[in-house]
Length: 468
Ligand code: BES
Ligand code: MG
Ligand code: ZN
Image (cartoon, rainbow, N blue to C red):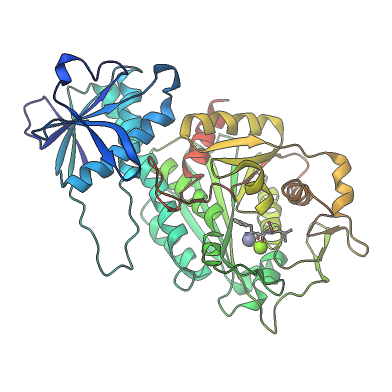
């Protein structure tokens, strides 16, 4: 799907017109019929000739940026179903033109996403062109940014959806190498020997049960070395079976998405590189497979991290924090000033906030910037506390800390665990995206499957952090 700018003379199959509440019944649209979808009435209206699709924006006070993205996302699938090949977008004139154009284009690109790589019947995309008329430079720029943000999100979706027998840790590493080849970003991959040499004991322990060995992947993008170093650490479990503490669900295929923290970091760097943002960023991905095997890590296992912290593995399913610890220690060894880790870490975070909000923890300054970035990007976050008293919950009888917390507050105790691996002088935040990792159903610009959550959030955060 290409976006083209035209002076209005270009022929198109259909117009897509966003219209404020009340106007739909105006003379201009008499004869338009409301489109009925599987879900019932849609507030989308079609004329008899099929030349214009009108999108009702609903109540003005309920219209926000996210709603416009969603309407554009739903509209694009309707146009696809109708076999439209080119559509001219008529902006609603409720926000400023560049904002509207960006939101609509982003919503359309994401709403038309499909993951059908492994299907016999692949539906060809019918919609080839989205036409914007009389766009000034501001609108063109905004559309360009929106396309880049959508592409970063799509990379993250693709990676998340990929089955675990295909996307092994080494395959993820290769993907990253390829994706950033011939860009300003430099990729370094640590395999077995290097992991041992660097005492990445978390990854090595989590990965013990699999013949598909762990990787540590660094993506460095330094376009302005004078900017403070920001480290983005992503959980990259290409599959989480729980290990010896085996998961018991009827279908645990979704645990192929346990690398979505890494996917978010990859997507964010993709965006930052393409946007040529002046920054000093390093993405750190901890990739492993958590499987049960005679050689697996076992409950009661002791891990001694190079920062001096010893850990009791009480449950092998709390593996993400063990692997992330390596990434956090590394981030402190390279003196990152700001550290944000992102992970599909706990079912508890998903239970608390559902699939629209990730839980965030940590230092206030970073958290506030993440919240702003979430509002702008549509990847929402909400803060949870880290009470000092809860440290008691992760005490161990024979190690410094235990990888599961006593009692409730599982998302919080996971965050408290991670804090033991953050350097003293670093500003840190932890994003638990177990909830928004996946969209259960297709709606608006979200497509059932891996959501691509976090790519837009982290890219926007880095942009905001550089301005702060
Ligand atoms: N990857 C899971 C968390 C998860 C669950 C993500 C559902 C997305 C959807 C993580 O490794 C895990 O297994 N966490 C356990 C921790 C527990 C054993 C302390 C959990 O949340 O149940
Ligand atoms: Mg687990
Ligand atoms: Zn996991």
